[in-house]
Structures are given as structure tokens and as C-alpha cells.
Length: 114
Image (cartoon, rainbow, N blue to C red; front, side, top):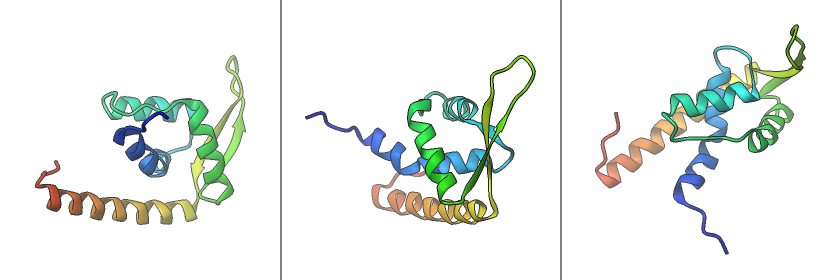
């Protein structure tokens, strides 16, 4: 049996927050989301499109994101996702929960976060 590292579990628990946050500013396609997560985390977090697309599908099914196909000249067709009004409410709630969680962990462990 393979053991799951804590890093993998934390990534799973924060995946929705990360994706919704990146869609807040503008519509993005899956590959763009993967690259932004990796770049903004300094390489500490990596999502493969194979795990990201099922998440995007679930978010779309919940009504938190809308997806639409876009075709651009000399590029392949891509599905762009954008945040819905309901998704914005969920994002606000998740940010607040995450902030409270990090603060509680910091108090218990004595780790100060930046």
C-alpha cells in the first residue's frame, strides 16, 4: 500500500480554492490554470491536466464555474472556464475558512505565516 504524503493531502484539500481563485480575474483554460499554479507557487504545487479537468467538471456541475469552447485561428479548440456569481460566493467563503484554518494551525504550532 502506498502512503500518501501530507503535501498531497493538503493539495487535494485546497484544489478548489486554488482553481476558483485563479478564475476570479478572468476566464482561463485548464493548461493555463496548471501553469499558473506551478508558477505562482514557485514550483511547490503542480497539477496535471488529468486531475484538473475532473475538478473543473465537478465545479461546473455545481454551478460554480461556466465552461465554453473557444476556437482561435491557428490554435486548437480550448475550453475556457469562468467564475459564476455562485462561484464567487463560494470563493469568498473558502478564503475565509482557509484563513481561519491557517490561523488556527499557526496558533497551535507556533508557526507564523507571512
